Length: 296
Image 1 (tube, rainbow, N blue to C red):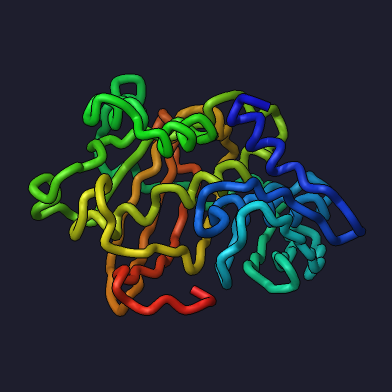
Image 2: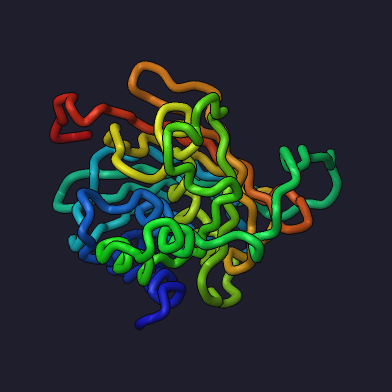
């Protein structure tokens, strides 16, 4: 397949090898570790495959325990914790080469009518995505061309990402910057009509830029990086149905960074300003000079 969106759908199409056991493909990438969003998305697929399908995911809570190895399959073991009248709960353990690398608990909720209705609006008005360059276009405009390594990544990137305030290339651009960032995103091609696929695709995308908000007060988003960054845990709450192949605004902020860890919160809106998903993630930030342990 040459279309990155088709590759994403294929990546999320797990092989069932037992009643509660699934195997996920892990592409051979030129990366130190498997992308965390891939593991989260595949684990959520495994959880969803063991439900009746009439209850959408309403939340997930996950821990990244060890870095996964690119090119090595990942096995997802599902525990059927609960099948209630309104809620279904699944616990998923991701194992690679005999070691647990990731844990996820997902809850599914039968849709209900009524109750309290309110939401926070988007933090500010932003330009429409059509008026902004993609990341690749912004880099080409700034450098004159895309470096070969980034060209390969861009060809495989399943999401079109457009930074509302640009990549912030210099320290002068981030002087006095608040720990906030915002991007428009959408899959680069159609993802079909299965809502679970869209939910898992968005779980994949949610790990892409969220920790940018932690970095912004101390370093530009482009250029040499002073930190080795790794996701530690990830939580999402899904409020409304959505399509990940339509534009959504990912508004991100970091309330605190201390002790080598940074916390980031994200709110995902559609073009009409409806809040679709809430996200919280903590990341590990180590200077490159710090000793690197085998488990993170």
